[in-house]
View 1: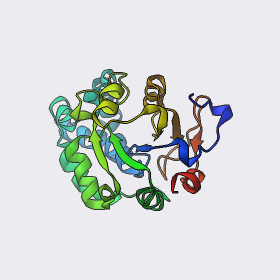
View 2: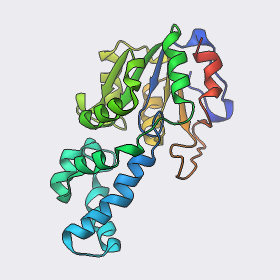
View 3: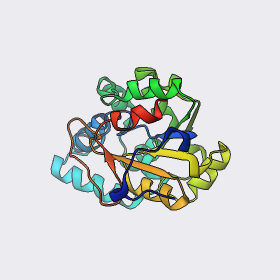
Length: 229
C-alpha cells in the first residue's frame, strides 16, 4: 500500500527489492541545470537576437512552456532547433558546475553494496546524461540505467512506468523511488510504486521544496540506515 506523507516511515529493508533514483536534483545538484537554462540561456538568446535579457527570458518561456510535461522539454536537440542556441555547447561550457548533492555518493555506495538492486531513471537526454557520468563517475554504482528517451515518453507520462518496470522486471510493490519533481512522483505513485520520496533541497543555491503529498527528505541519511543494508 502506498505511504501517505503524514504516515511517513522508513521502510524495512525486507520490503524493498529495488531502489530507483532520479539524476538531476536528486543525485546531482540542480544548480547546474538552473544556471544553464534559467540564467545563461536567456542571456545568450538576448545576445544572439539583439534584445534585452528581460525580453529574451519572456520569449524563451513562451516557446518552452507548452512543452512542459512532455519528452521535448528534456531534449537539447529539440530546443536547439526551436531557440537557435547551441545548448550542448552551453552544457559543456558550464560543466564545472556539475556535482553530486551532499551525501549522494555515500548513499550510492551503501546501496550498491547492499542486497538491493539500484536503478537510475532519468529524463535527461542520453548525451547530456553521459557528460554528467563522465564528470562524476556515478554510473558505476547502478545495476541498470535508463533514460526516458529510450521509451519515447517522459517520467511524468503515466505510460512510462508500465514500460519501464516491465523492461527491468521491477515489482512496483517492492520498489522505492526518489525524485525531485512532484509530477513525476505523482505518476509513479499512481502506477503503484510503493515508496515515493521527494527532495527538499534539489539545488544548493535554489529554493526549498515541500509537499503535502510526499515526504521530502532533507538528506539521504534518512534512508541510509535501512536501504544501505
